[in-house]
Length: 347
Image (cartoon, rainbow, N blue to C red; front, side, top):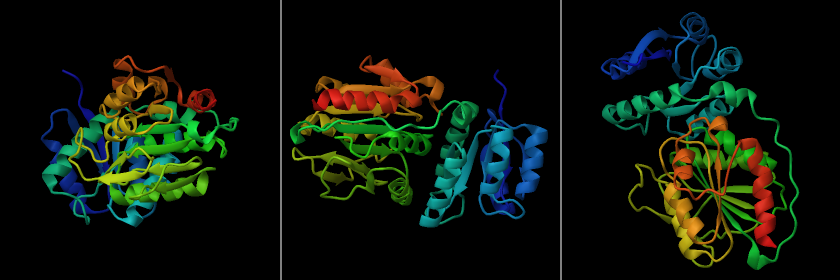
């Protein structure tokens, strides 16, 4: 029988610590080995107990969650699942935590917008199990700084559309990828990242400030265009018409998620007449695998992130298993290969 996943709960609220402990205590595969009420205590317990996963709140005395991540992860690369309020402020703070190396997040029990405890329990158990297998150390050390690559001009009718699927570990991965791409790259980019509404909005704002592209959360009626990046809004699917105009759909979730990358990619393969490039990045589950099959059958090119550079090798693994991937690459290799493919397809 495998050893249980050892979890350290960190939150200044006695109520939240009690709730989390009760949600976890009935699962034989998970064991709570400690609780901390502030950041300093959490740092001490993490050093002493060496947990497999930490659940972490942001607002705490002495050391807050962000300060704790800055001190903890360079020393002890332990997977961290953040507890977040599903608000604009909570989204901004959580995205900063993900940039610092947290693996994932979940709505904090008792905060606005968080579903019932039964749903929270299901999500929490799943995220802890996946976090326990995340490659925190490799992510922190393996990637060289992104370097810009060179693009060449293309006729408007040949401007490709790049369709990207990502989930757990995606914000950091997307940041790295977009930062490496030249602003004059002749392509349009559409991204489905599994996140709730306030988070996709905040993610688009953060990227727009940092990368050489115009990045926005997609809105009904937006049109694909070179130099533009559109992120699918949380709780909607993104689909396209034959003119490249974006439409937002409230059709049922696929693989339990909305937005789903499969919906976006299948729609692109059916409707768009430009060269297509599908990319599946880090994430748990299998979203994107069906979509890249559609892209491949439509004459497109497919890239997937390799296991060594993924936080969670779930979605790329499912994509590779389809046999439709043209290249399986480290994250550090994807920007260069993407530009090469765009230059080839746009010629």
